[in-house]
Structure formats: structure tokens, C-alpha cells
Image (cartoon, rainbow, N blue to C red):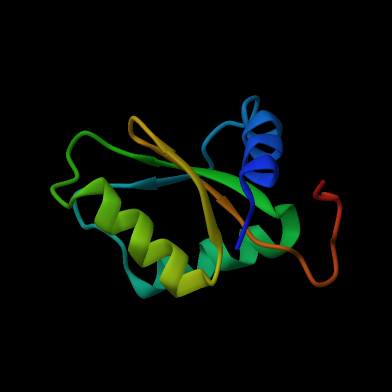
Length: 96
């Protein structure tokens, strides 16, 4: 689990990032979870945006993504989810 200090640090790092995944009306599927997991291994910190046409609850989507990838939910603000997962081979972010 991330501490409050670590979450603040990661939020500041994520501020300038653009979302690289979008959840649409089809919701979250296995393929998307696998792609997000791969992206987390390379980048450690990513943003996922939830489109207006998505009918699922954004809290439920965030829960599905964190469960499926094993990532930590850093922030859920508006229609944007910020996820963090420590990389095994491409570690670049040093947590405070």
C-alpha cells in the first residue's frame, strides 16, 4: 500500500502525463487489462481516461483495473484514473 506522502509524490509526477488508455462503452475487458499491465511494466505510472459513453461506475472501473493488473490506485479525479505499479525491469520512479 502507498502512503499519503507517496501518493502526493506520484500525483505530482502524473500531472503532466496524458491518458494512454480510454475506457469506452464496452467497459473493461481482459485484453485491455493485459495492455495496461504491459504499459505499467514499461512506465510505472499511467493515466486512464473514462469516456462519456461509458455506462459503468468509475469507481468500479478503477477497482477492476487495480485488481486485474495488481496496480495501486493513486488518484481517481473526474473521469481520469491514475495507476502506479512498480516495474521489475524498468524501474525509474523512486518513492519517498
